[in-house]
Length: 219
Image 1 (cartoon, rainbow, N blue to C red):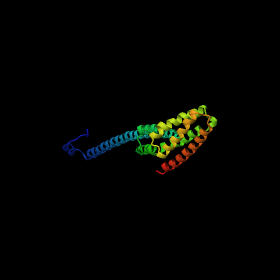
Image 2: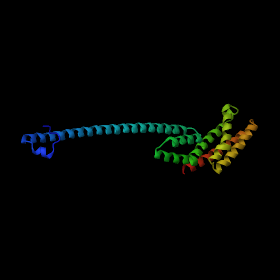
Image 3: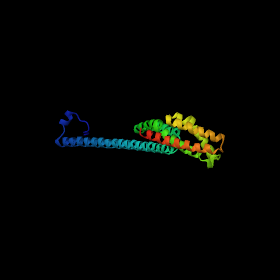
Image 4: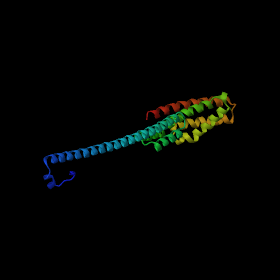
């Protein structure tokens, strides 16, 4: 007799041995079902685990790539700050703000840009102005390419960059005085008194730029 699906009345008609076999069969069927469910759960768990691992790897790779890009952008910005051109610094910061998704870095970039506008730019330009003015006050190299380039750069600083970033009134006054001496030199290069006056204007400009730089650093 087949004993897979018996009715209650059929079960009553079974002998003791048949009933025992029937119960054993039911137990075997339950065990088989349990094994199927167990292996199904194991397989499902494996699939989920592989998925989680793959997603985790992708996130790590993405994070690594983004971190690498951010590191390159930050290094690029730091390299740019070695130049005396604040506009270049701000362009590099703009790239960081455009491509970075790190909230902390974005907040830092905003603070850095504000500091550039209020302090760093002027400090760099003041430092460059002294260097340029020192070259222009050197009579020994007057007329050389170095001197001519310094002259062009001084006028750029005088007319454009220092006013743009808000040079202080004392600096404006000393820049005007130095420019006056520079104009005299260019009109008549051979007058010794003009070169001596240039030295005096350089000293005053240098002293003022030092004082104003200290004030900026205290902000």
